[in-house]
Image (tube, rainbow, N blue to C red; front, side):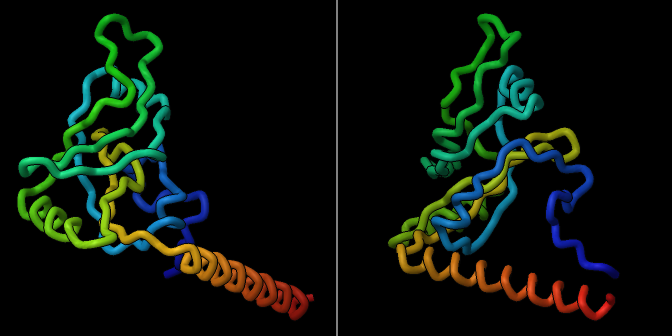
Length: 167
């Protein structure tokens, strides 16, 4: 079976991506990922269906056994009236108790945090992919960029060699 590299194609056909935090993978070492549901109001869902959201400043905090998503910007719905939501309110995450306890224990360790990676619809329901992450040092970020650049250069050289062989 051919391997899909995922460039521009979604892995799950029932998944519609709304927002992605690409810089999180650059700034943090991702240790573990989880998929969670979100408690949203009607205007938030309508705004998300228009593809409008930003995860840039978002983080997850566990408070009294509940996981909360903070600082995620979902702009107000244009056709909403007095029922509109505030853009940066905290939103409750729907997770299993054991997952929340595990995340809370791991996030207490030094240098660990919980960050949102992606916001999407899966089978009509709003989901957020969160990750337990550890902050990278500056030299780790440079090393990662260097490895990506080297991998790209080798892929280009291999594809160029294959093209020359065919011709």
